[in-house]
Length: 224
Image (cartoon, rainbow, N blue to C red; front, side):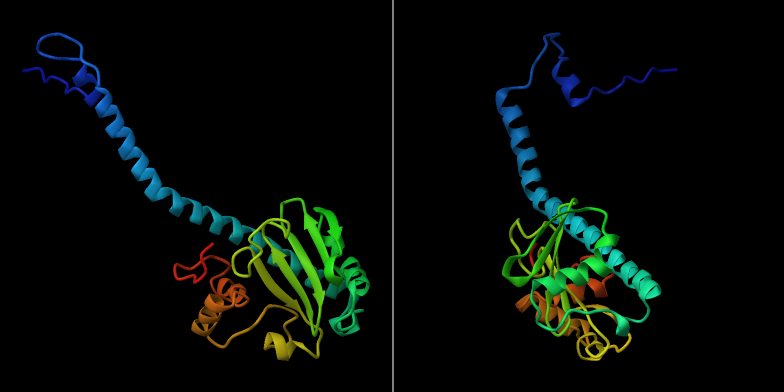
């Protein structure tokens, strides 16, 4: 039986010649190879970075929403219907906001590391690098920042996402559902309407992500 000779790899081929002399890669060949690798990396790295950012944001949003929904469930069980809760007055200063947060929310977060009170708001920082700003208006606004307020860009739809916690008389107006306590804001009747608003304003981007189960759709209108 005729023995089949094994083919040389590219590197081995350079080390074997008919004359028996060893040959190395030239500097030009090495530079060309490195240049091709660099071009491929330059083309693929932005996409990899974007995908990583999206994954981080989605993971942190899912965690925050899960904790908030669990808080509502637990505190409703412990304290009864929200109509009996001691809600901060509309457009109140930071003290009632902090009392409200401490009574119903703080105990459910095990990773609080610091608090600040800028601009009559309460900002709570967590050990995973996120933060939430609590601001009382018609409802209590929770502005969740996936890399904390101390880090840029601090832009709605990129690293900041808004949620409302509404008392019974405001739920229908802001959450479009009289039984919904915690919701994204603003609400929309269609996905396309929300996507358009997200592109121009940013606050609607939370609704867009909620629509997609907190994952980034391919047509997400804001560049991260």
